[in-house]
Each structure stands twice: as C-alpha cells, then as structure tokens.
Image 1 (cartoon, helix red, strand yellow):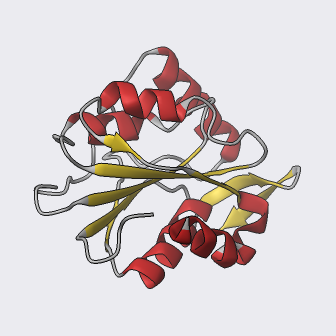
Image 2 (cartoon, helix red, strand yellow):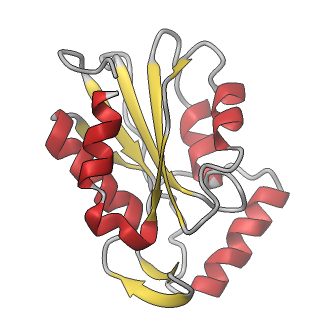
Length: 173
C-alpha cells in the first residue's frame, strides 16, 4: 500500500452503544470502527476525523437499525455534527465505517459528497458481523469517481481486539 511519506487522513464513522456481536446484543463503550481507526492512526500517524451526525443515534440497537434502514430507503444525507474544513492537504484517505444495510451509513454519503476527492487515494475499511464490505466499494466509486480506490479491508467486529495483525498486513500489501 502506498501511504508512507504521504499526508494521511483517517475519516471514520462508528457507533458506540448497543451493537450486534457474535449473535447477541452487547454494549460497546467504543465502536468497533473507532477502535480500528485508532489502530490505523497508531500505525500510520494519520490525522483522525470522526464523522458524526448532528442527530445522535440512539443507544438501542433495534432503533439504530430502524433509522439506518429508513435513511437508506430515503437516500438521506444526514447533517453532520461538523465537517473537516478541507481534505486538500491529504494524499491518502482511510475511510472507515460499519456495514449498515449492505453498505456504509448514509452519513458517509454526506461526507463524501462534501469534498472533492480528485487525485486522492481512498482505502476503505469496514467492520461487520459477517456481511463484509457489501456493495460499499461500488458506492464509494460512484460518489468519488475521480479518486483512486485502493484495496479495502473488512474486519469482523467480533474479533476487533485482535485486528492489529490484519491491519498491519493490509498496510504492507
């Protein structure tokens, strides 16, 4: 992966609170994608940017699922709590998200449409519980056709605590 010596941004969306893990609902004080983003920061030295919506998602897992499905069905663009001023100084964007409804949360659509990714390289990383990246790579390409889409990484949320080796391998490839 071509990131060393380049200015890196790790932009990610993550949901803490009640999450589906290994067939049951558990309370995660830090979301799986955020944990992966923190590992990436440790290994790359990139800048972290947590993509958050202005309307906070509820803690209850089933409520979050309902909202995510409605946002996807409505092709919504949730308002972000804040946005990064510019991505102009970055060469590489590591883009992290959980798989929601077979793709990335709609907040990522908002973030991606707010910026010009021309000549940027996007390396997607996704946390999931068995569904992989879904069709998020196609969605990212459609939203950022002038960006280079690098190799993605799908991390099983259940094993996120042991993901350091997977992330290191991904960065070496």
